[in-house]
Length: 104
Image 1 (spheres, one colour):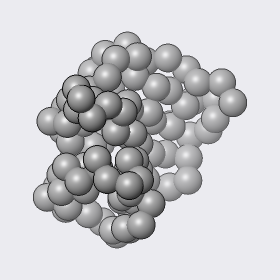
Image 2 (cartoon, rainbow, N blue to C red):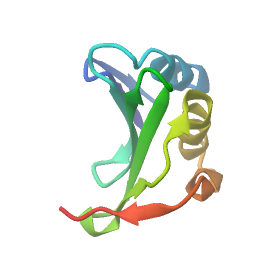
Image 3 (cartoon, one colour):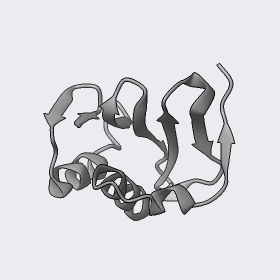
Image 4 (cartoon, rainbow, N blue to C red):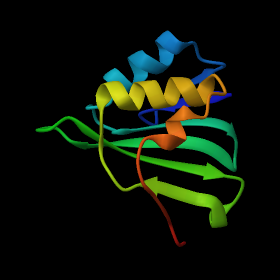
């Protein structure tokens, strides 16, 4: 598993602490992070709004046909929890809200 943070840092097999630190620092220049199992299995987030400190979450489960975006925005804490759960193989992150399929 790899964590890509702000487009400039890459971590192999990141710890929970590394994931947390990466997401906490996202309101920087590049405002996204991706946690990849491989090219077609990942969760990613984008720091959306500085005023409300909200994140937009997407995940891909095998192909473009299985690429989804959460309809609701998440707090920093919820985003960190979702990434850590995904990293640890837990599926509860998928129940954060309503997901919509993205068309490419």
